[in-house]
Amino acid sequence: MSSDNQTAIEFKGAGLEYFKIWIVNLILSILTLGIYSAWATVRKKRYMYGNTLLEGSSFEYHASPITILKGRLIAVALFIVYTVVSQVSPEAAIIFIPILIVASPWIIWRSIKFNAKISSFRNVRFGFEGALSKSYLYFLVIPFLLPFLLLPLVGSSILTIFSGSFEESFLIMFAVGYLAFILLIPFIKKITMDYYINNHRYGQGSFSTTLLTSKFYAIYGIFILAVIGVGIVTSIVMGLFLGGIETVFEQGPAPEAVMSIVFVVYLLLFIIMFWSKAYLATRVRNYVYANTKLDGEIQLGSSLEVMPFFWIYLNNFLLILLTLGLAYPWAVIRVTKYTVETISVANTDHLEQFISQQQEQQSALGDEMGDVFDVDTGIDF
Image (cartoon, rainbow, N blue to C red; front, side, top):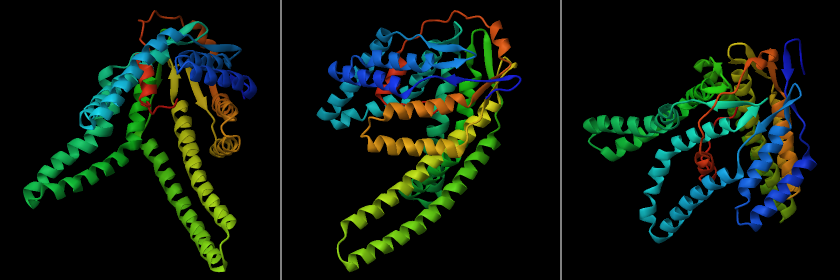
């Protein structure tokens, strides 16, 4: 786990301990109609942070439940307004969609700033200084406006001049826009990771990373080829099972056999999904960590492996399914323990030089709106 100049991060959390926190949080959140969820969030994150240690020192989570509750109540109120308006007048509710889309980069930006500010290690706070304009560029313009609006509109206008049919040309260009969005995914992942890491701070220190777009396309290219290969094999297996179903029905009804076949087919689909998730998370994270430093002196590292990560995902899914959700805390602990303990930090003696900087107070509104409206940053670091 450690070498001459590398130290692995430890995670001391346990399934039973976290289960006690989780079940109390769940019951109290239900009994208080969600009000306690702010305290539940703080209890959960303080447990996770407090059990994550580097050289014997734990990380800390400083958010106030009241601060989170204020932001959450505002976000819930907006969500209720949207729900009521959509019931009274679905047409009027449509206006909320572009408003939410336009607000999403701001929500993501505020969420990142808030979560950085309330995190610390050895009494030194983290921080995020990314510009809001870059958030709009990376989370709205490039991923959505560029492929789905600019390309289709410009392209359809050009095609209309030659074909005279706006409808047909627009459909063609929208398809082109969707293809452009797919092709942009590795590039979007790269620029968002650049934005996220290069604007993070630890005290007066700055994180930095140098990532290659070509590396992200290579990772996603291998991923696509692997999924296609697995998809072909799965199709063959499903074809054999479908042939088995025909035989079953020819010989007479046998519901148990049919259910077994359906179960196997669904299991194969989940296997593909979990392997895909494990592969992308492993390859991207290992590459990003290997190219990330703090003040050019402290080097991060990650040693995630695809198959162990895949088995954790698959086993967790089956465990949660068989226990009707009660095993969820153990599943969370297993994933957290593996992902945390595969992180290493080199030259940790340089950490002593950092001092905490005063940072402006940030509202929790952005973070909690992201939870209510299910807006994810798409960044896993």
